[in-house]
Each structure stands twice: as structure tokens, then as C-alpha cells.
Image (tube, rainbow, N blue to C red; front, side):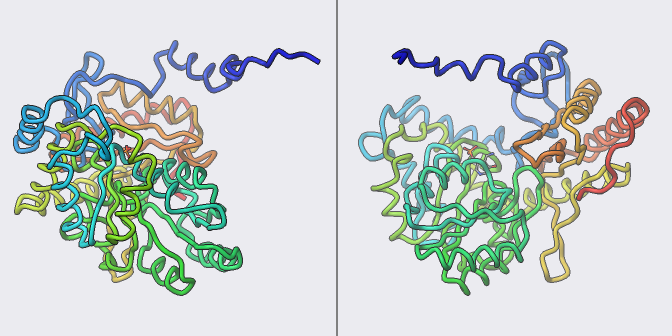
Length: 422
Ligand code: PMP
């Protein structure tokens, strides 16, 4: 019997995806790891050329707001570049506590806890609150960090088909038989497809089955609802959602994440969540920027920014649809209104075609994000466009013109693109 282990690195050699990536990079077709030469503005410099930025999560355009820059600078000056330790030990500064208090106030919850990233907020919450014997019911479109937290917890994972309430109901019926606690977790706004969870109906089901509910508002907070508190606020059901997660890495122009909920649960996370306890605290500049951005959002300047980003989203969505692209439909709110989120995906279907279309747009001066399997279901490759409040109509029109001309040339060579989203 051999005592020599196989090389644990063997899997990285001849890895199919790696080979594909290398081939794409060699042909200058790789849509990933492109570098920005400046801030994420509506029009950016990227690899030596100007490109319209339709691939940023800087939804409110606050990363260069004078007040947000000042918040970061003040924090940097006062507390230095890093905190060199965990929140539990030496890493808490008053800005963390203020941010937590203001988030709780904004979300209308008893308390909130700030994590160093949004990913850690999900992993550190789900991995802590769920335990073997519990069941977690998750939408199949949920963000990877939710899945990671669920897997870490070793709770029984019961996924249900994306945004299908009938499937959720059936899954909850099964989960009730599992015998443990049940938590439902959904994205409020789904990060790739830009559609929204029907939160009131999900609350009804959770209440009927005695399940707890957590909503990831990474793309809903700072975007939806009268105060930008997210999908639950938009639907008027914030008080029926047990836990709301959010990030500072999108509308709030920084980096970090939070969980808002009852004092009891948040306090438990503060002393039990390993992704909170065993990592360094968010750096002062990040906390100062997030706090300043939250204050801008909650000032009289906030609502016009929220209106602007949603107007731009609708304008881009409608424009792409008029030009024959398969784009996500406006999302019904159940009261006759509908909403378009800043995430406006264009369905391409085939992975390779998506890469080629991305490159044609890039060369035409428009940057978008490319979402391939496993970020989307197989055969569901899409170009994920996203708008900012600070895009003006002339810029969006230029982007739409680029989409039109690229489409004609692309279809002549590669055949028709899909015409309907799903
Ligand atoms: N949840 C969702 C829905 C997200 O889209 C993201 C980031 N893309 C995260 C969580 C993780 O947030 P962060 O990037 O702040 O770590």
C-alpha cells in the first residue's frame, strides 16, 4: 500500500474552466478582471478607453459624493488605516456603533450588527443561527453567500424553484415534517436577474408554517421603498420579516454588511458568530463612508436619488426591449403597481455567445457584466446591465445606440438573440 497521498493540487491542472478562461484571455475575450482606471462613474476610463459603465452596483452614485468622501477621510484621519483586530477585542470604534444604531433606526428594528463584508454577514448569520436538525428553505436564485452559510450550518437545505410560491409552499410542508426549526431565506432583489421576491406572500406562508424569514436586501436596500430600506419596506411588510441583511458595497458606496433584527438575535450573533468574531473589524474609512452614505440617503437628498435610479432603470429596460432584446419584465407589486430594479439583465442563453456579445459591446464603449453558469442556470447566460442615479439620458441613449448597432452585426454573424426573457 502506498503511503504517498495524491497531490491535492492535482485538480487545478487541466481544469476545464481554467483552460476556457485562459483561451478567452489569450483572445482578449475574457469579460472578467477588466481594470478600471478611475472611480465607478456613469462613464469610466477602462483599459485606456472611455466606456459607459452599465456594470456597477454604485446605484446611487455616492462613491464620489463630497459628503461620503469626507466621511471616509474624517474616519481615516481620526482612526487610521486599519483597526488590526476583531470587533470583540480591539477593533470597535464609535463609528461602528453609530452605524449599527442608525441602521436599526432606518430598518425599524431593535438592533443591527455590522460585519466586515456582506458575504460574512450571510455566512456569519446563517452559519450561526442554523444548526444540524434545523431546516433552511432557500430560493434557488439566492446569492452564493446564502448558500455558503446554509452549507456551513449543516442544517438540512431544502431549495425551492426560483420565485415559485407554489414550490415554496410544498417545501414548507415537507420542512414541517423535518422536526427542527425552519428558516426561509430569500434575496429581496435577485442579484443576477433583477427580479424581486414576493415578500408579503412569503410572509403569509412563513406565518402559516411557523417558519422564520430572512431577506437579503443587498440590492434592495438603498434602492427600493420610500426610505430605501428595501423590498420589505416597498411591500410594507418590514415588521413581518425577522431578519434583514444588507451590504454597504452597493448603494451605500463602501464595503461591509449588516443584519437588522431583534435585539435578542443580534446580541446572540455578536457573541456567537464566528465570521464576526474571528475577523478584523471593517476599516475606519469604510465605516465612515457607509455612515455618511446612509445619512445622505436618509436626508432630503435621498428620495430624489432613489427616484432617479429607478427612472433610469425603467428607461434602459424599455429602451432595450424596444430594440428587440430579451429583458426582465417589470415586477408586479400586487396592487396594480410594478417596479423595475436597477438590475436589467439581457438574456443571451448560450455562454459563448454571451462572451462574444459582451466583447462587441465593450469594443463599442459599453461595459456590462457577464453572468454565466453557475451564476445563472445552465443555458441562461445573460448580460447584466445596471444603472446609477447619476446616469443622464444622453449617456443611456448612447448606450442604447451601441446595443442596437452591436445587435445587428452580432445577429448577422451568430444568428438571432432570444426575444423573450423566460
Ligand atoms: N448578497 C447578495 C444578494 C449579493 O449580491 C452580494 C454581493 N454581490 C452579497 C450578498 C455579498 O455582499 P458583499 O459583496 O458586500 O460581500
